[in-house]
Length: 390
Ligand code: SF4
Ligand code: SF4
Image 1 (tube, rainbow, N blue to C red):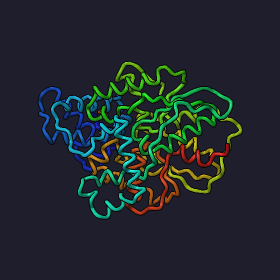
Image 2 (cartoon, rainbow, N blue to C red):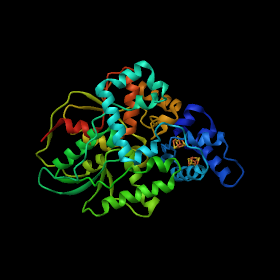
Image 3 (cartoon, rainbow, N blue to C red):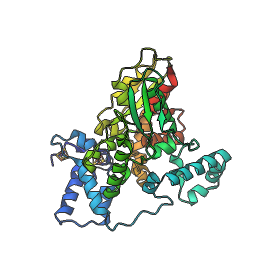
Image 4 (cartoon, protein in one colour):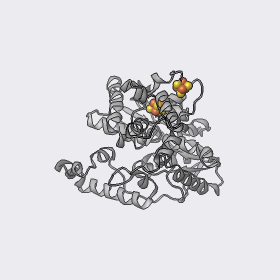
């Protein structure tokens, strides 16, 4: 109740409303728990508007586990709540590989045939209520099957597993392929078990704790038979949730973010990078900054590229508004927070923006495109892979 977290909360900064702050939300949850408050629409809205960015938790001197409290509250409130009407339920899409493949193929075909642009110009996308999703979905690659193993390309140091996730598999195959390229070049064979599924973060944060635990256990089992030193993830949103499996299931995965893994290992002397005379701004996702606490790792890796000017995007301590499905369900707050990022980008004028979380990258790229800013957005690993000389 000290309130030291309040200045670090993005929704409180935007509204100056105590009920939109960490302390206020904890008070509301306490009121619910002791029966002094009812779970009415107003109370639910204050809890729903939390981004779960956990900036408050990172600053709390009493180490209050805000994320755990909010997950438990949302799980309790989930009972009897009507599902939001959407053509595609995001959590279903995250776990259904066939549906993912069908939707990805549909988007790919719509791009290739020009139907997507036509639907946008005729207002069909808007009429179907898909405008928000359509803005966030980039041009995507045709879905493809992953090999189950990618061998090391140099003297072998070991094997790792690769967590491909759900939306990374749909929208960010490039980063996954680039991660394999770098790991293989550094002497690591990469297993991609087909039995893996969505990490379950979307479900956990929306109160679907039972399904989140099932997904966690499926992933633990998928990697359990492999002789690997780590399970590598390329999206910090997934990676931070993989680290919570011990709390959720009682079993753990040896999860490691790709930036952290490549920062820790010894690289072969033969690997060099071509110089790049450009300015790159580093966006630090909340999951990387507040949960993994590894926001230094992209800087460490990018320093390998000669002549590259690396800056931290001003305002990195504040969430960009993506926050999983928040960018679709709470568009007003999500866009207001993104506007702050766009202002910082315009002031810094970088040539490239890097972000280590696919959700943030999609949200930021959609804003950059709408604001007609000429800027490439990609994962730091993809920038490294592009400059590598093997
Ligand atoms: S998780 Fe983020 S949005 Fe939610 S209360 Fe904490 S600082 Fe505010
Ligand atoms: S969550 Fe921590 S920082 Fe925030 S009011 Fe409570 S004790 Fe203070």
